[in-house]
Image (cartoon, rainbow, N blue to C red; front, side, top):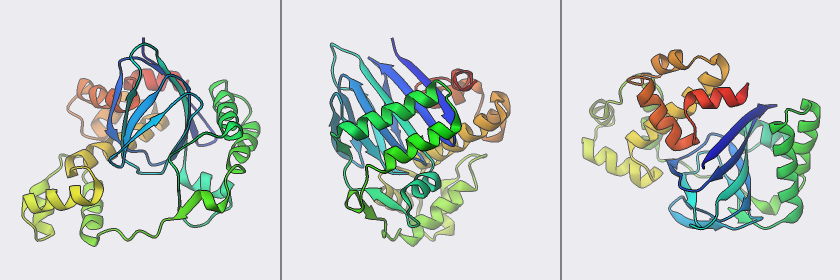
Length: 259
């Protein structure tokens, strides 16, 4: 049986997951994500490269890093914990000002593994926020400058402008024709360029951004129907179908787990 439990504390979301048949659709998160494979094998494509995290593997995801996910072992369940840490909080704990990226996506480090498990448990069991902050510092103390690379990547200006235009349409229907016209491209030139630069189509990017912002809105309001209206989903069924493909639970199950 697939089971996903989420809890929030000090701007960090902890997830404890057990899955057998579930698979994540291609998506990304706005946060840094750090996780530990407790049992089984987690297989996923990260920026188009196949990865496999075995028992005790520590998974490291950068913000907006595209990935999917599934259990890689048919005869046992995949159990793991994951922390989603807002970039500004993670960088503050690291003592960094500039955006950095993990230089490795999977490591096997006993102390880092245990520190992630400790903070996950503290959040899931709703321990004091001061303790959670100290446990976050324990995690970041595992990293040195060599574990990161500075993010100096210059984004294609056309793609950057396209993303900005898509952000403005999150509560509406994506109009690729209008965006392409504004960028002085044909519709198909635009789709091809966007996918070549980001790894996903404009519609996939639009839907992923819509879900990220809808989840944040849902966390603050606890109002599912207001979220459906605010972000232009056809109805609750439409919202839940997309939400579950990325987060493993329905919107209602998600807010119930946060209570």
